[in-house]
Amino acid sequence: MLIFTRHIKRFILLFMAVLLSFLSHSVIAVPITTITPDSLSGEKTKLLNGEVIVALTNLEEGVTGVQGQIYIAAPPKIVWEVLTDYNNHKFFVPNIIDSGILSDNGTEKVMFEKGKTRMFIFQKEVYIKMKVWGENLTRLCFQQITGDFKVYQGEWLLVDYPQGAGTFLTYRAEVKPDFYAPQFAVRTVQNRDCPIMLSAMKKKAEADNGTALPLSNQ
Image (cartoon, rainbow, N blue to C red; front, side):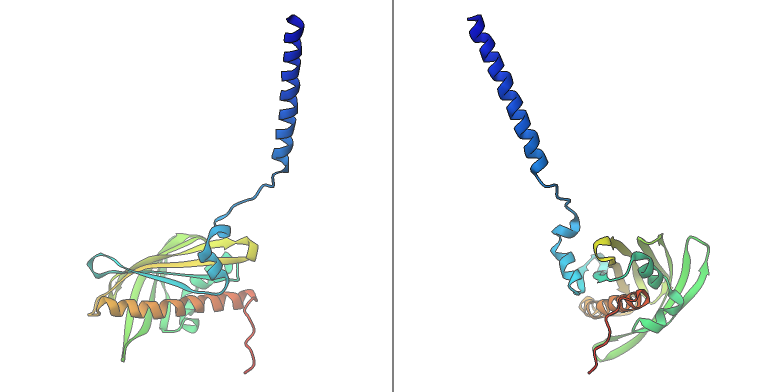
């Protein structure tokens, strides 16, 4: 009986050693995949394919929520420089007539923009004086101080995409004019103007980065 017991113990030990060896080799053989949001997001795939994505929401008290996204083939540093080039927005962003910095205390800037917007057959000029602040290369916040809006505030978000040496740029805003405009009309204007603004930022940043596509001869 003692000899039989010893054989059983040896068999169990041998079996455990073989099993552990098999498991360790199996773990090593399994490839390790790094899962990132980029590999899972169909939305980001659309952006990489050149789409501009805009989403609108009706918020409380007649405020319209706007979110726009675009992919820019330029690093966040270049995109940030374009976003914060307030004195020159008037030269490359359509619908902006004038723009510039009014003051800068080192952490917060006060700037203005004068623009024109079209609503159906009507055209109106709007003025905004706002403060801007944020976290360098990642987040830029803005809020109206005075101007033609009851509510105008939001942020720009920059997400680095090292695989493509580019940036996912997101614009979020809450908007309510200080003049009569039905909410459906505000949505129409934002749905038209937001992609134009994002595309202008993309065009300027990619030109500054030397990655803009050449114009085709027509």
